[in-house]
Length: 154
Image (tube, rainbow, N blue to C red; front, side, top):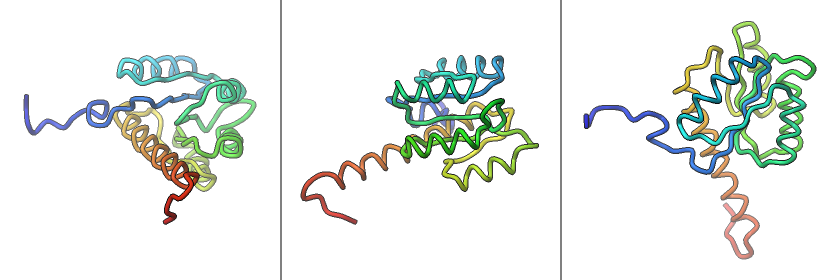
């Protein structure tokens, strides 16, 4: 084994226990992305619309949502607002094309964890998922310590 080889994202920090929801109205893109993430043993669900995403979130707890900025009916910004209002602990990563970069920046102001440009590099997405999941776990841990009687506050 080469000691200088950089580990793949899925080797360096596993996403064990992380539940990911990918929301995109482009069925081929969504299908390909889901297959590539599952090949890396990531627990991932797919939604082709904002409405479907909200239905999934009502019945299944998720840690990270990756959503496209441009979708019909309800765009990614409105969906981000709904997610953050109902599930503030879920981290959201925005996917955007060049034309909607401003919307991704707006999403950051509304609480998105980060954004990626389409077409998305799978390793870059995995790094972002790991970072978002790490943040989610830290916030959960801090929240549980604050609720523990006798816990010291920072």
